[in-house]
Amino acid sequence: MPERRVVITGLGTINPLADNVPDFWKFLLEGRNGIRRITRFDPSPFPVQIAGEIQNFDPERRLSRREIRRLDRYAVYALYAAAEAVEDSGFLSSSFLPEKAGVLISSGIGGMETLLRENDNLIQKGPERVSPFFIPMMIPDIAAGLVSIKYGLKGVNYCIVSACASSTHAIGEAFWTIKRGDADIVVAGGAEAPIIPLSIAGFANMRALSRRNDEPEKASRPFDAKRDGFVVGEGAGVVVLESLEHAERRGAKIYAELVGYGASGDAYHITAPCADGEGAYYAMRLAVQHAGIAPEEIDYINAHGTSTELNDKMETLAIKRLLGDHAYHVAISSTKSMIGHLLGAAGAVEFIATVLSVYTQKVHPTRNYEFPDPDCDLDYVPGKAREMEIRYALTNSFGFGGHNASLVVKRFP
Amino acid sequence: MGQDIFAIVKQVISKELEVEEEKITPESRIQEDLGADSLDVMNITMRLEDEFNLRIPDEDLTKISTVQDIVDYIQSHLQSS
Image (cartoon, rainbow over all chains, first blue to last red; front, side, top):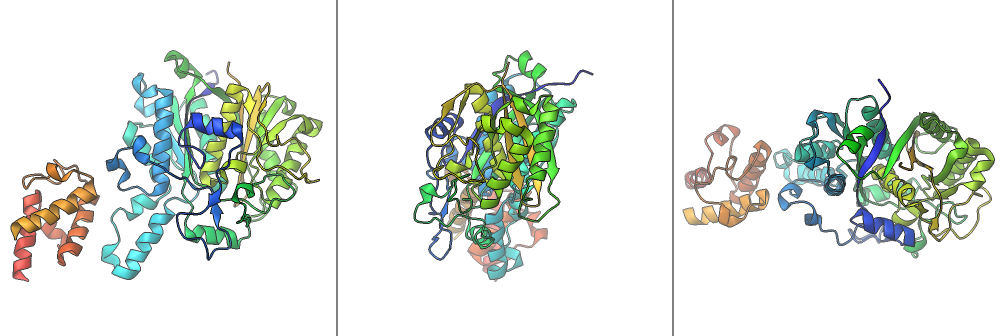
């Protein structure tokens, strides 16, 4: 059986910059800021008071009140982004085999807001007042289930949880599922809604977050010498992956081809990435090998680029190990500089940025890159978007637990 | 009395199921007509228990199908308590 090729035919997102893909891409190219003081709760007692919050969100633009009513916020984001991606792809109006259409939508955490509310109910009102919707609202796999129910997709369906690498793994596994012939179409991505007091406190106490409360617009500054941690963001990214044959048969718009996926583990520490970037290097190397290209053929990297001291240094080292001298000739940018770190949704939203870079032959800037760090001495596309020829682009995600995942996207045709 | 109970039941169902109040009549069947699933039924039951300060045991739920069934059930149990 000849190996099947996998293409991207639909994109959808909701994130701190925009509630749709065209605006998101426009605002990324403009280098806009999505980080502000937290408004969802009073952050005054917290050491960290900033986040990438989604504001003025009207889920009824794409979803009915009836479907929203018993969803955790994270699942609303997932369904909202999925609706855009599915519509964009147009596959529902073509003839497709439902049993060969799957859903792999991830979340790093799931419905934590619901978990806490129902725990309050349990303690204050007793066991009989815990909502019957609590469990199905809270579990991180329900978004994948809900999307399949809504669109009648009866192929592969599950949820990968790997912290901040979750949705990159989801897209990567969707890639293999289509390649080996188990599915023609997979709706893949991730969603996260972590802007609640408990998680902000938890991340803050790990000293993982930026404390630049007075200048939220400057807080997420990947690869910059004055970076002091990441900024939590929220939202979702969902894409439609499809076998090339299937997409061509129905005359679908094809954004780009997904040609490589690599995953690895750090075997090092629960939260710190291994300092020399070995694990990240293995994931990138494997993705490039599966793409069947030489590392020097990579033109652009959408970095994990969290704005933490450790990540940005080790990711730079890993890129240098992969590319050698060519590391100084690739463009590298971090989407997190504008929207913060969407945790389990980050990989999918950044994959969308990567796909659009290849599709439009433009790369978005890294916002807030002002002060060079000797440990981060590559071309991070500071400040201004760039038009450039991109044949192959790489995107990285690394998660607590030492989970690393990388994807390689190729220009199509 | 029955009218007041109906008004409250209608409100609760409308809110929990996102169904317009005008579409809820005494004859409406909770699952078949209003689209509730088994979890919705449990959820609505809990809301009504809070609203009327009574307990509806699971075995009694099997006797309830329409909005009128709920109103009758609440009315008889409010009187007996």
